[in-house]
Amino acid sequence: MTNQLAPLAAPYPPEIAAILAGYPQQDGYLLSLFRTFANSLRFLRKGVPNLLDRESPLPLRMREIVILRTTANRRCEYEWGVHVSIFAKAARLSPEQIAATTAVAIDPALWSETEAGLLAAIDALCRDGRMDDTLHTAFTAAWTKEQQLEIFALCGAYHTVSFVANSARLPGEPFGARFPESAASQRS
Image (cartoon, rainbow, N blue to C red; front, side, top):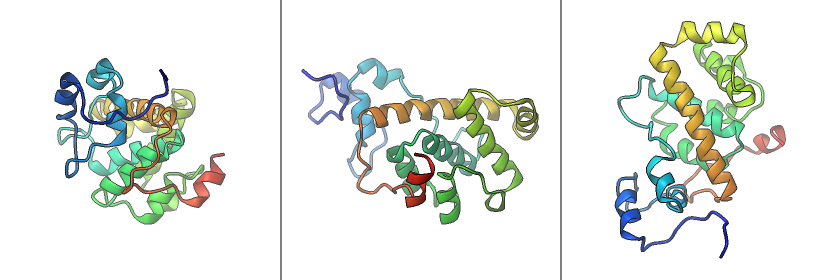
């Protein structure tokens, strides 16, 4: 028996099948990540909250900036690629902005002041688990308390997603985007 995480294949045990039926699917296809979660019934139920709903206090664009930067910081091409392919167009992210989410340095010319501040906050959270006083002051001025908590939850959830996808060594989904070539050399 191996303890290597890998996506489960159908047919699934009834209890797992029932939970997976509630996960998003595209034309009956269930992401490898979700099938990897199914290695643990508890994790499948509770491991990662689904924050991709219409009740989010964040606009879609800001949500996706958080997710793309977090997954890029964790070097999780799998999840970064899924979000680029599914949400980047609706989030109105340009090809240059998408590529820039993987860059080490934030190019302020590509982002609004609020977006650049959000990227800096995500970098600090991913790197240090906190923001310095200057960044924290700007962050709390830009975001409501509800939005701040949503940003923290997204950042945390996508750390977990990245840990799972990277540890399972999930290859990119067939439809998923790949990191720009420059990302591999910049984050090595």
